[in-house]
Every structure is written in structure tokens, then in C-alpha cells.
Image (cartoon, rainbow, N blue to C red; front, side, top):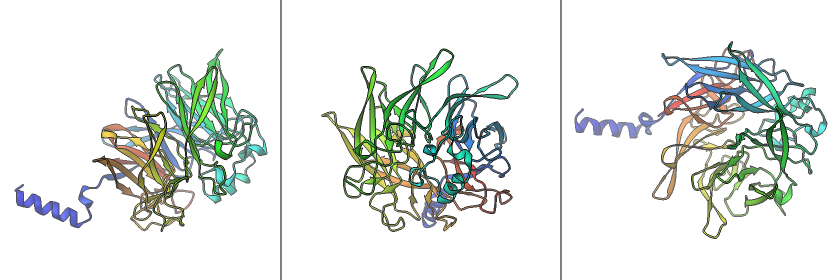
Length: 448
């Protein structure tokens, strides 16, 4: 190619809005609605297999699946386990994989214990009002949730073990976030209900005498303390835990949320509020997602609302990506890395970000799109944030378009085979979906 030809090609690409330089998306799995609905992936293994959950798979209570790549680029889905509601589990929220290949996760409902205190309030869940109404009409919706393990057997089957059944009392209820391990093999997570104030707990599960013992590390009290934690926790080298609560502020009628730290101290755990959202103009609001840490211990996350934008988001702002940076005096300073603007940009980034090369950040948002897609709003996007000269720039990697593409992301993104990004959507996919023309969701791949 001559220099002139190359220049002409670059100019043509720019004239097309950079389309020739965009990432490429493809659907690697489209849910049929018969045993699989709203799939998303949260873990992978060294062989390139992906593991995830269908919220409403199986007979409607959810399932765990594996996606395996072939040499031709196709993917095969295998259902590893199907939940049955009570006392088994209902609506799994993804899985974490250990080095031995076992999978660990939580179910929002199901389990051995039942009670009205285990019913989520609409404001405490990121699900749509129609899904919330359907759950209230299902008696099993009021079971309080579980922590489970799936272990592979030699014949290719998997065995589920319930590690803990939440009771809805002081121990917590309805866990919405994922799980993390410490170096000793203990599990940590949050439950969005239960506890002293019935507004959630942070918990630890420790192996003991062949079983597992739960310890409540902190019971949230609402107000300045935080309420309804439903994101994943992060752990630093010293064993301190970091997370978010989407509600809870003093002196405000609209509860804006917090970022907190839990530190072990003399056999107990002490909570410190690192940041209260909405305390400055154009700050983020409502951090549904959990957080991640960089090597220096700085905290990164998203808020589902807030920020400077707002024309497409009801005046509340379309959400932000933020960093909490450690200061020299031991405090924390919030930096808004990016405020979303809504269509054709992203909006409602309800999921955590993940690190890429050179401290870049990748994530998915349930709203926004340049495609004009409509279902309950724009179809969602996948985005990248990169820093240059101390300034962060956003790029939309993919705008979902609805069936047969995805529609409304239902998870963040993870890196898988080839360094590609993978995630899931709640709707979209094959028009042959048995649940309706909007599609039953997809798992997608995005290549550089």
C-alpha cells in the first residue's frame, strides 16, 4: 500500500465516524428461552472456558452454564446445574472459580428459610418493575437466598452443595453480589437485606469441621452508614474490604449511597465511610456496582446516576466512573473519571469496571446506544476508558441493537480467550426465543 493510498483509507474511515476502527462484536451464544433466559458470564478457566448464570434458566429458577470454545471459533453451551427454588436456590448471581475448578456463587432467593422480610423493595434491586411484580406473585420469592458451591465430578456431572442458607434475621438475606476469596480460603460477600437494621450485611464464610460458618462483619444501619449493599467486595493486601451501598445518607430525602471500607481490628471489623455520593455538584449517585482496586490500593467503581450529563436521563445524570485515590494524609479524594451523557453515549452503568492494559478500564452499561433501539429504553453499550496526559477519554466499543444482537446488558465484562471481552444481555438474541419477540438474551464477544 502506498502512502497516498493509506492516507485516503484513513480519511475515509474518519469520514465514516471511525467505523473501520471500531471493535468487532459477535453473539457467541443466544438463549432459546427453553431452560435458558438472560445469560451472563463472570468467570473463566485457563483452557478458555467461560462460566456464568442464567437468571431464569432451567424451570425458571436459574441455572449455571459453561461455554467451551472450539478450534473453528464456535462455542458450545453446557448446563452444569439447574436450580429448583426452595430449598435449593433461585436466581443465581454468577460464579467465582477457585484454583481446583470449583465454582462458588450466591442466589438471590431460594434456600431453606422463608419470610416477608426477605422480599426485596423495588428501590433495592436493579431489576425492572415488571420483574419485581412477577417475583411478588411467586411464593418462593420470599425465601432468603443461599451461598452455594458446584464441584466437578469425574463423569462430567457437577454436584451442588449449599454452604449457607440465609434466614432473613441478623445473618442477612437476599445476597445480590458475587463472592471473593482471601488467601486463607475464606469467602466474603454482601446481603442486601437482614441484619440489625434489616438493610443488609457484609459477611464472611469460613471452612469449619467439613462445613462453613458465617460471621457477620458489619450490619448496615441506613442513614450515613449505608443501606442495601448489593455489589461485589474487593480485598487489599492487608485484608481490608471495600464495597458500596447504593442508599444511605444523612439529611437527604434522596439517598445517594456510599463507598465503605471494613478493617479487621482485634477480632471485630470497623466500618469507615470513604465517600458519600451527592456531596458535591455533578457527583455520582446510587452506586449499585461493587468496586475494584489497583496495585496502589486506589478504588474504582461506577454510579448508576449522577454526573454532569442528564438530558437523556431524567435530570438525574446518566452515571459516572469514579476513582477514590489515597492522599498523603491517609484520607481519600474522589475523582470523576467520566460522566456519561446518554444516547448515543452510555447510561446507567450498573456494573463494575475491569482493568485492561495500561490501567485502562472496561465496562458495560444497561442504557445508551447509537442504534436507536427501543425496548424499555436504549439497548446498552460496552465502553472503554483510557488515560492520556492525566485526562480520561471514553470510547463506546459497541452499541447494542436488539435482536438478533443483544439488548440491555445484565453484567459487566470479563477478559477471556485471546484477550477478548465477554459479557451478557438480558434481552435480544434469536428471534426464535420461546419467551417472546424481544429475545431471551445473549452472551457476546468483543474483539479489538
